[in-house]
Length: 470
Image (cartoon, rainbow, N blue to C red; front, top):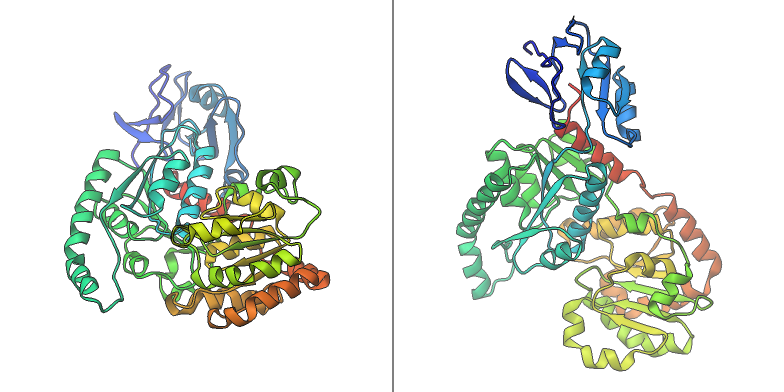
């Protein structure tokens, strides 16, 4: 580091706090030599972090990092020169919540990628209120609507994945894919140059590959948030290029460079973390009674055909048991069967393609039926309700079955393989509804697996990249 000076009696802009030989030095950088507002030069070891942010306090993560690093933390609403004069020490401004950080978040395709992306964006928005966000998704995929509904800007890339079908149409699409990827990479680079992000975050999905690759080629800092125990091919290919990889499961050094891995857990949406269980407002939202048993069925954001077909066949039995039902079918199944589904709806049976208020759905549920995706598992552990898992059988390396088995081994869930669901799902659901003791045990055990600090852990890793301590 070269010598750094504060221009005497000058007031620096909030996002550039040091001047080094006439060059701008951004938040997070240090200087060997400072000049106080009184003109005295200082040349001593760094001992203080100053936060210039009126009316706010440092978060726990920053305080902990400073403590571990042996750095005193000073909060001031005065200008940095006043603090410098009082302390007579060199200063490092590590975090300024008024900074206009710029983040690109890329990926999507399913809720398992979209919801973590939104959870990260929402928490970053709280941490840095003036931050600017741009999402990059795949044209035609669900992130294009869900991200906009959440209040963020999104741009779509014309990208798709490898088709495993042997049809002529699929073969032609696969032959075109290298050219599609190159075109998407060019588009992503153009977006990077226009938006000028401080960090690009990839959460998985078709659009994540071109966006992260473009960022690494342009020397823009990057972070991957990998939700699954078995990563997709895109993240495995990009692992050596990115700065940091946040994972949810141990043993991920099999796929990623060990030095880049941080086991943070999977981020869960704030609305789930702050869910008010059995609230009257949640029952009113769905028009249900709080004194009756309620079953929630979710086959993932895109639905699950096997679960849907089993449930449709068992609706009459559930009606006879006076059970209330909230059923998320997925868009495709709902459109294909809309008329007969609507005929089955009653005051106690609520059928919809997608549940927007998922916190309320979880809140009213007594028993849940779900696929076993990584994010679903993370949310279910937070919710702490008895659950029947029907893993998607075609997931890479059957990782959904592995996710579900990890819960079963702890007596924290019931597992029914997809190929056995038609025979076993409805009887098991009816049994569980009526077994209070089993429900209590499952609820207690799955609650032990929750990771409430995952989002905080990820934000801490992001801060280390954009505003390092040294």
